[in-house]
Amino acid sequence: MAVAMPIQFDDELDKPAINIGVRTCRLNMRGLPMSTTMEEAFAVKEVFSVFGKMEVESICNGYASLLFETPQGALRAMCASGRVCYKGYYLTVSEQDIPNKNFEYMKNSNDDLTVDPTYVKFDGNVLHQFLSLRNTICFANKDVMAFPQIAVDLENVMRMGWPDARAILYGSVIIGTSTVSSDADCFVYVPKFNLVENDFSVGRAMEIFEDRLNIFLDVQTLDDHIHPSFKFFHIPSGIYCRVNFKHYLHVYTSRLEKFLLSLNESFVPVALVLKYWGRVHGLLGRDHMSTYGLMILLLFYLQQPPCYIPSVQYLQSKMHAETIVDKWNVNFLDKFEMLPRHTKPLSIPDLLGGFFAFYSTFNFKDFVVCPYLGQAIVKNAFNNVDNLSDIFEKYKNNVTFFCEPPLRCSPMVIQDTFQHNCNLTSLLSYEYVHEFQGYCKFAFEAYNAGKSNFFKEFLETILLRKPRMPETIKIKKFKFKEDLYENFENDVESWRFIVCENLAMLLKTICKIHFIKVVERRNNACSKFETVWIGIVKKRIWERPANTTYSVDFLLKERLVTDAICCDSNLSTSLSFNLTMWYITGTKCVHNDISYIRGPYTDFIKFVNFFKQQVCQWLFVCTGPRCSEGFLSVLAKVDR
Image (cartoon, rainbow, N blue to C red; front, side, top):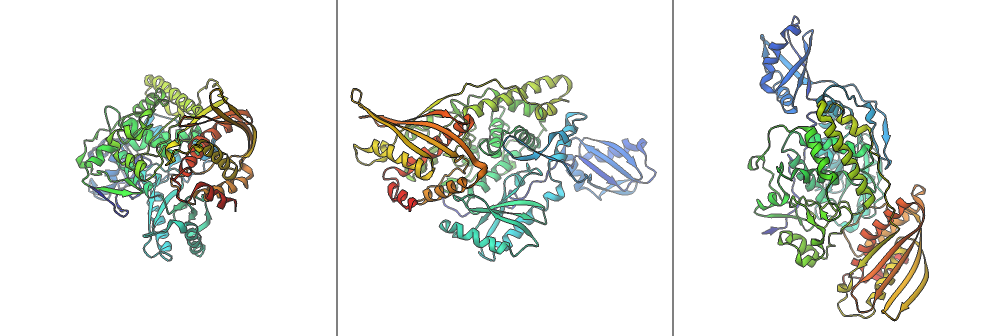
């Protein structure tokens, strides 16, 4: 039975994850008799071995340095601090102090800042190298424990405007994969919040924040007219925080991700290495795969035999009721004791090698990565909603009865865990897929080569070296087919002409593309009608957030996004293309062919993906009776 419930708050799953394994594998211990020397290391080791396999690295002046093999052992030793007795002396255990980081940041190909990997010490065995990596790129635990104060301070301020407001952290801070270059993400839940008043609400919140300069600095709005939000620098925690009012689902996906990665102590370290690997090589970031998308790839790999983690469908099938957020079920079984677990620590290099091997040969062209079922699904299965398996009942109902857009297929399709019509990689090109798999193949070869020397050079190779990518064939022409006939309730003879005219108006009015009609011709022999346009793009209009909600005024907001892009001198380009729109009388589809003329080819590929994933979706939503106010009237309002 589906139960529409308000957003729920889970104190345990919403807590920031301590980076156990970052600094807590190596501990300081004090309180030993001053006469204790390294000759007594074996006796000290016997006392602490009850917590896990470990070594005593040094003993001097009553202090000792302990190195545990697993983070859990180190954590157990820390929890017993002050209660461990050696020769009548009670010993105190704490995490080892790490000097303040003054590392330089590097920019990857996407202009995203990340810690330069040359600062990582690749000395010793692979465990020592991993600890060096974590010590270099991660927050200290004392910093992580200060993160909840962000939500507390934010909530106190928000309640001055909305007394029932609730602030919840989500994302990498909660999951345990945050790095020193990460921002915190916070969702503000306001009961009975009116989304139409988003802009006013954000502005009102910022006015309140600007009066709290002792806690918040650098308060600024983010350039997102679809989901207005803002960010600030939180002085007590020393981190930037992004605040939004809309992303209910992000809170639940973070909880699910944290729960699944907690099923084995090796999963979070693997996730951290993959995230850093993707950042260093420019595989993550704007116009590329998101960090969340990469984490879903990791979860999907772990769902494959021997099935280290269960599928989302299995976790939801164990619940008697649904929790509906934004039309999707987000409830799942989160009880560790009710699931079979691989409690034995798994090898981090083996998990990484398995990940790289799996995706270096994965058939992204024909299959969807589906963490909901934990198995790959043929893309063609989503072409017709009626023929889709009843396992996707929620998807079928939302697309059929609630006018939610269907899953859009692209060269790489990673389906969201809860929102099944969301493709997390909808804007990626074939070139990106080729590049991603090239890096995976290179990393897998480094894994195989590392078996002979216990992986001593494995991390250094995959982080500091790049594969030699073969030249890819440039595709000059892309073809699309629009099946919009069903959007018209009556058999309107002119529906194809309406679709073509509306598409042209979309590109000119909303995207601000300089559009010139070159020729219009009809072939009476085959009843083919064809219109050829030349388009000139001066700004990278594809660098905008993907929209998944389509209110009556969503085109107005998209126009504002375009206006903001046109004002940004850093987003200039010069791209020319041909657009041929044609149809054959008597058929039920319209064809669009986009051909490259001149300009940056990478920008052309990004524009083609933008056209396919967003412009075509706008056309689908706004053409025909699905648009409650009518497409042309909305465009007329935009022009005014």
